[in-house]
Amino acid sequence: MAQFILFILMSTLFYKVNSLTCYQCIPETSNKCVETKVECPVGQCGTMTTTSYTGNNKLADMIMKNCSVTTQCVTASVNFGITNIVMNNECCGTNLCNNNQSEPESPSRIPNGMDCFTCNGEDCSSTLACVDDEDHCIKARVNIDGQKMIMRGCATRSFCSGDLSTQIGQSSTSSVDMSCCEEPLCNSAQPVTPGRWFQLGLLMYAIVHMSF
Image 1 (cartoon, rainbow, N blue to C red):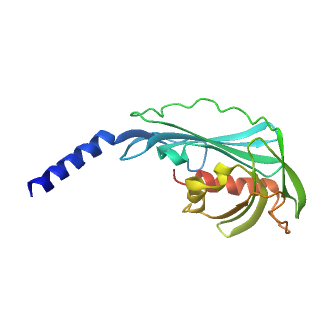
Image 2: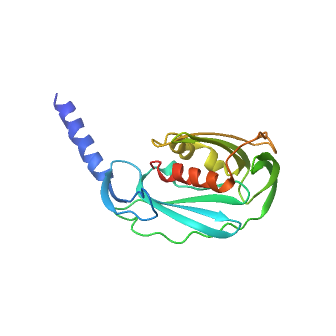
Image 3: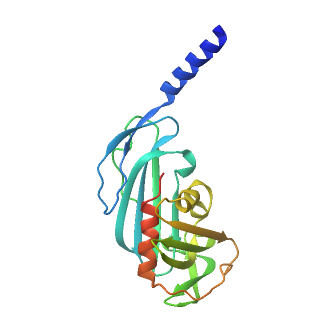
């Protein structure tokens, strides 16, 4: 019994030593949100900046702060041709360290030799030259409030795998079914109805409403 009580006391002390206080800030309907403080029993503090681009021109930034785990501390991107989204989750390991965020660098947009199918209006037979670290082709099926669509393009490995894609797929306000492949043009093309700007808006909505 004494050993059991000692174990409980040590476990409690270990939890307190490793718990972390982080800022939490999750936007709902705009880029702005109110910071609060939360206790994170494990992991790190994270600040995720989600930026949408058309070409090299920045359209919008969304900033979220919360507890994060090491596997989510990545830079990832998905590219649908005329528009692309870059997510940069910077993590740190001390109390309230996610109090600010440095400006992420704009994508260099250098072709890497990989080609994937993309959609141009209702036609998804066009091809897209992937750039930078985009080494996967992607198909994404999104269902938000009855609006269904299919998107195709290029993505980084970090976007396609691990906790990031799981969190996007499990968003409580949307259904996002993503599949990636590593061969050129492996995301075979089919017709799709929504235009690209509508696609970008729905995917941004799904990403912003996901949890860390």
